[in-house]
Length: 176
Image (cartoon, rainbow, N blue to C red; front, side):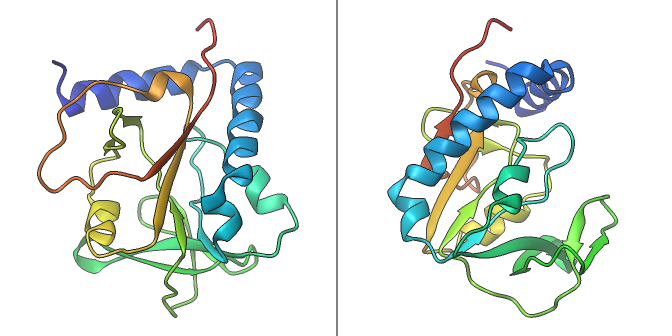
């Protein structure tokens, strides 16, 4: 079985060369699945993430007019994470190059969209290796979900500290 590092590298390479037309098609499809789900409909405060170019594109969710409070993550010292209100005019680049809120008030989400590179069939994921989300999710009682492209499903053994997501919304397979 491949190691997490090998899977992380393999999926990252695929994300970099994923054809734009297929990415757009799967993105629209997955966002439609997500927004039709009971978890999304029930949530009032939804935590999204500011996607990097290779990550699943959440732009549609930021652009839509909706009756939800949108939160985004902010990295704290000791690899801790908090969520704050999203305001496109109140963002700054973190040391990781991610856009984060300048707000300092932490807000507890009802639903968190958890980013990553690969997921197994039980909802465990391989992230970017910092452990921020696993630490936060260890004490989180709300709903969790991930959105992913078809090739991001992989077989791997989770580690004891890994936290699974409850819902996965997955694009239909492309010839890729």
